[in-house]
Structure formats: structure tokens, C-alpha cells
Image (spheres, each protein chain N blue to C red):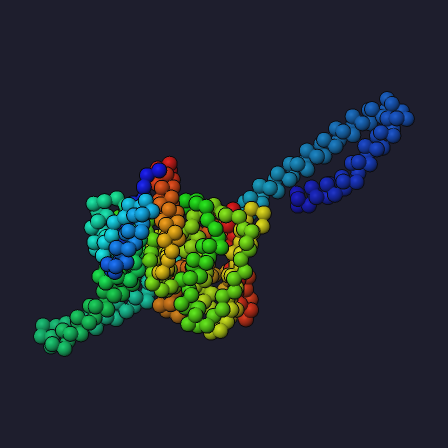
Length: 299
Length: 132
């Protein structure tokens, strides 16, 4: 309501105020004394009007900050919910196996267990041990995810960093006959960044692209710079990502890969790293039209 | 500027001898060991700026050795050495804090440049931590 009133005043004012000055000028020119009185009265009126609209505006600003905080809080809660679901799912699978195995062990373990039952017990113990390791692997990865990295800035050539990581995916792309199309801008300035962290981001994105495409497909790797940012885009011609999924892909433990193929942490860790380097990652994708991930980092 | 101290870990004696000689000639202090276990023992006695670590070794694997080095010696950077590009070991190595990867065969200048960058990274990191 306040905002609306203020808007009306300013809208009206943009024509009325200059016109009123002209009118006063005219009156003051013709009749100096009443003209000056009119000018004083009018300026006082204007002052009152602007002061009240300023009051309304500041009220609106406060309201807006409140709304923003509320929205952020509810977003945080819903993100937390999604993340918890992911973690619970990830930990429940090994827990389930451990529970089944211990039940089996209860049956097999009694005073006169046969040789065969003892053998089964040993096997179950091995499985339990493996699953506990799997759980601790998950918690370690979580810790690593939340770890506060202290980026150290060195001079680096973004094309070079990408090329290095392309070499690591080369054996995979060659065996699937994937063509890597490099469109590197040659006039990109060197950037100040943390090279090993950025390498990790590029390798994660390249790995996702390689896993997303079929045999004989193309992956486009493009770099360019604009103003004080440099950009690296990795575009694949895979199945693409639906609008709904795009909201979730940066959540930890969100994965579409089959079990054992990915932890669901690659993108969330990458985004965290790029944020810590002062940049961000954008996604451009539609179902059936491939996906492009662009890393934006400051020079 | 002080000389960079490098430890090369590889299970191939011929390669170790050669790389040791070549780096020595480029004014780098080089020591060589044959496996991950020996590398950890060496590091417990001597401070090293940069470790060049072969990914595939019998006994303690390259990745396991890397994890231990990163856990115990935060001021030492590690460059992984690999005979073939492998995404999986790449992701594992880099997410466990390897500074860089280099593919065999490599040019000595290329390696040297990476060693220098890794050493600079370690020095800067120390400063950041000291200042924080």
C-alpha cells in the first residue's frame, strides 16, 4: 500500500514538479512579492510531500527485508529436508544390510554351530565390516563436503587447466568414441585462482558429461572471457535435465547414476568450490536437448 | 629463494634413477623411494616441499599414500604421476587433495613447471594459515 502511494507521488511528480517551478518562475517574474511568497509556500509543501513519501518508502524497505528473511528461512528448511532425505537414504542402505546379516548371524550362532554355520558367520562378519566401511566413507565425504577450504590464489591459465583434465578423461572418451570439441578462446587473460580446486571442478563436470552421453556423441568444451569474468562451458548432447531436476542437482547425495557409479556429491562440491573462488555455476538444459554447465570465475 | 625439495615415489628403479639425475641438474633437491611405505617413512624424518607420486604401485597404493601424506603433512603438496588417464583415480586423487596430475611420458620442463607451481601453492597456503 505504502509502495503504491509513493509510486503514484513520484509518477505524478515527474511532470508536476518541473512544471510548478516554471509556473513559479513566471509568477515571480510578473509579480515579485506574491511570487516569492508562493515559492516559499510551495517549497514547504513539496518538502512535506517528499518527506512523507520517504517515510513510506523506508517502511516498505523494512517490510521487504522481513519478507526476504522469511523466504530464506523457509528455503533453508526445505533444502535441509531434501539433504536429510539424501543422507538418510544413503546410510539406510548399508544399515539395512547390516541388520539382515546380524539376524542371520543370530540364527547361525549357537552352542553347537556346525563348521558350515561358522563359515557363514565369518562371511556375514565380512559383509558387516564392508558395510560399516561404506558408512564411514559416506561420513568422511560429508565432512569433506562441509570442510572449509582456504583457497590460495595463483596465476593460472584456464585453458591449460581444462586441457589437463581432458587428458584424464581421454581413455574413457576414446573407448566410447566420444568426440571432444574444444573451442578455446585464445585471448583469455590469466586468472587468479586456486588451480587444484578448479581442476577438481572441471574434472567433475567432464566426468558427468562423459557419463551422460552415448557412444559416438560430442562434448563441447568452450572458454571465453567477458569484462572481469572468465567462463568455461561443458556441453553434452546427453538426455538433458528436466526443470524439476535442475533444482535438485546441486543438492548433496542427489544422483541419477546407478548405485556405485556416483556419490551424488560431485556437483554440490563443485558449486561450493566455485562459490569459494568467488564465482558460480549455471546450468542450461532441457529434457532431450543435452546439458551445459558453465563455470563463471573472476579474473 | 631456497631450493625446492622433492621426493619421487615410483616402483620402477630405472625411472627413479633417470628422473633423479635430470631434476638434480635443474637445481632441485631430489630424493627417491620405491613405494608408498618408504615414502611415509622418509617424510617422517625429512621435510619435503613436493612429492611426485606414482598412482599405481604394489603395496600401499598411490591414493592411499596420498591420503596419508595429506593427513600428516599439510605443507607438502603432491603431484600424481600416471601411466594412463583414468577418470576414477583422477577424481579420487584430486578430491583427496592432489595438487596436479601429470601423464607419463612427460617433458622435464613441464614437470618442473608443475613442481614450481605446487611449491608456490604450499608456500601461499602456509601464509594464509599463518595470517588467519
